[in-house]
Amino acid sequence: MAASLVFSAIKPQYYFSRKTDRSCPVLKHEQSSFIGETTSSRERCKNRGLIVTNIATKPPASSVVSPPKQEVDQNKGKLVAWKSVKQERWEGALDVQGQIPLWLNGTYLRNGPGLWNIGDYNFRHLFDGYATLVRLHFENGRLVMGHRQIESEAYKAAKKNNKLCYREFSEIPKPDNFLSYIGDLANLFSGASLTDNANTGVVKLADGRVVCLTETQKGSIIINPNTLDTLGKFEYSDNLGGLIHSAHPIVTDTEFLTLLPDLINPGYTVVRMEPGTNERKVIGRVNCRGGPSPGWVHSFPVTEHYVVVPEMPLRYCAQNLLKAEPTPLFKFQWYPESKGYMHIMCKASGKIVASVEVPLFVTFHFINAYEEKDEDGRVTAIIADCCEHNADTTILQNLCLQNLRSFSGQDVLPDARIPMDGSAYGSLEAALEPNEHGKGLDMCSINPYFLGKKYRYAYACGAQRPCNFPNTLTKIDLMEKKAKNWQDAGSIPSEPFFVPRPGATEEDDGVVISMISDKMGEGYALLLDGSTFEEIARAKFPYGLPYGLHGCWVPNT
Ligand SMILES: CC(=O)/C=C/C=C(C)/C=C/C1=C(C)CCCC1(C)C
Ligand SMILES: CC(/C=C/C=O)=C\C=C\C=O
Ligand SMILES: [Fe+2]
Image (cartoon, rainbow, N blue to C red; front, side, top):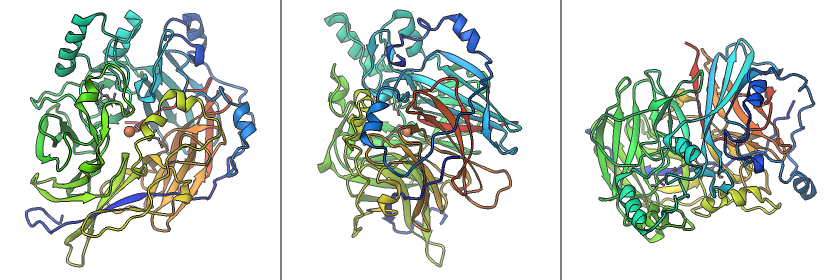
């Protein structure tokens, strides 16, 4: 059993003061070739439905102690996290060590970029990879795993033509000649050449549809959570247009909220979609306060009554979009002079009730947000928690595959942000001492019942230094300002996903699911107790799987 480690975690926070608004309620395996070419159908048949036995090897002991450099070097090249998925699909029951709680009945789905090459051509960036879905189906203490590639147009075209056909995060198809270059530019403006490679996340809508998403709107793809079949595009039936959106909508039993950045008139449209429909309706619009374009908006948080619209000084950049070769910040540009802002929009009226300047910040992921109220129930502040990267844009370069694959023992992960004071502006503060979680923090989840509400626990990936990527799992207690940490030295765990126990009354009563890409080239599903953060079960995969980004829970119906 892997020990639960106690060091701790950081969690920067934004504080906004706002005037009370009366109109609102207070309301290749490295060498592997492109999928389908190397894996023979014989091999696939052999693996399909395979019950993996004889895996009762002793789990690697966890340790708070950093692995000595030699150990890191010895295992160099075996870590499976950044290697393309071995084959297009697999499904089978897994042998479980430990006890899966009998109440855990349903399917955990995880999406992420898992295939980074077309034949001999290797992609540059983590976010370029073709989407790999992984499914962990829990039923009566048993576990069936499956993985499969999403059949996006981008993936199918790459397979058919053996070359890149759509614009990915950093990869751009090479024009054949000058005329096709002009055509490509036209296709960029119409969106025709943008990828639909839905490799960022997966959400279960309240009407039961399961949708994989990325930052391009056309990359919204409906899948079958049982078979992982690609069922077709999720077509938005409104006329809102635009080409991009936040990769992380807020999805609840009653709504789907997202942000549409406007690159022409810098700003954001906040939209809402009702379950059972494909039509987004506008809640309101925010104009940017600084810079030539909107800030990159990968995610955003909500409170009970407000949508928090972040305006990050790392902004979309039209010039970089047009460049044939990637720039250091890809499609973005850092404009520190343009400053950073947070806008607070009332969900009911669409009115902006506060718009504050905040210290420069760089974040992919907001964790949660909530309203702070005085004795009379008036909202006095909004706390928005995020995984902040010390206002350091080099995080984008760190996520280049070459950098991820070539860890030499040197620590390059940017520290999380140093606490700062507020004054007349919103402030950015560390929510707890950063060493609690090793000064790195990303890929977070919370108990979904606490979305938008004051909450105590966040689960995330933290860091055991030295490292070049988050390599621990951490449970942050925002009240005690402490963290419990779990680590399998040399391995990379994916986002710890919290599933509450039905009927639970405590916020952390549930399990945390993660998948580990281990240093020996293997991998396993891991279950931790949401309260003690101790391991309760693990199940080894037939082979290691690449790193994956975000997931969702689909309960058995
Ligand atoms: C995997 C992940 O988290 C992010 C993926 C982001 C993507 C695919 C962004 C793609 C884009 C383009 C292809 C052109 C327009 C800008 C931008 C949205 C960055
Ligand atoms: C995995 C990641 C950042 C890790 C750095 O600490 C960001 C992923 C973003 C997309 O979902
Ligand atoms: Fe994300």
